Length: 64
Image (cartoon, rainbow, N blue to C red; front, side):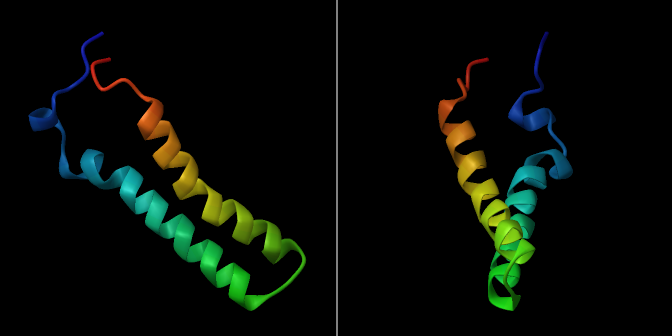
């Protein structure tokens, strides 16, 4: 199956993952500042999402 080239992608397709990473980071940081208990779990998850996305991007083969 052919993937769209960089020129064929829309603005939303280009910025969807960076936007997700930014929102997850913001939620994680706010949760870490606001409380304990389940907010700590939310903070860990929110701050782990960008790290996971970067790791996933580094492992992906750009030629696929």
